[in-house]
Length: 251
Image 1 (tube, rainbow, N blue to C red):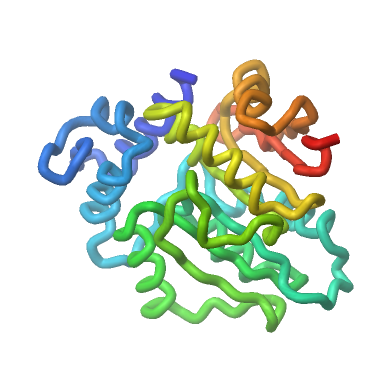
Image 2: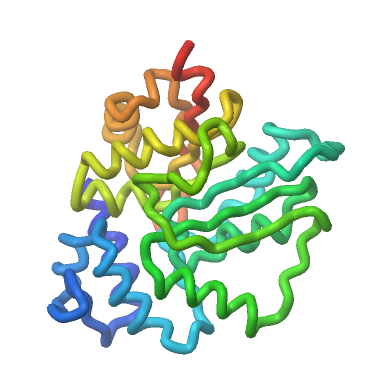
């Protein structure tokens, strides 16, 4: 777990070596402050406000969309075949920040999807909305696909009805929450499972190895049937996807 925190913080500081981070806007601190307050909204409000004042940049933890493209499109294909013509599958990216994950999945999916990117941080959400307005139009491969950015809490997904979502993506959000509050990290898992359809999937993307992540997911309500998947190495770090299906949890 400590390795994850060091990697996240060092990545942030490499991208923004002159910036300082704090637990709130009025108490700027150092990289250590960031490590100790990753689960707090004010920390990320400060980070995104200072990092992206012109809303023209994005930031990805661990890796960007290109590292995941084949894996994500395969997941979508598992949920629905390419000839799928029903209503758009609902995909929720929890703790999206200013990542390009949801945006690029919306662009590339061959079947219709509704991508809802949700984050606590208002500056992050506003930055992504502005990016869509000011940048080049993002044309989805499927004309019935949609994309939205929502300010909201991943530990209380009241925006989404129960059993209404096909796929929940968590890239690093659980890692941030675990740093500040194990209870909040557990609540996010429970909420993700609540909104998923029985055959939907919760996918956690992390560098945490199975010995640590599987016990956490089981205690959080995911059951003993979580499927770990090695995504491969990037910059010498091995990354994993942990796939949870509600139907298997209740079996």
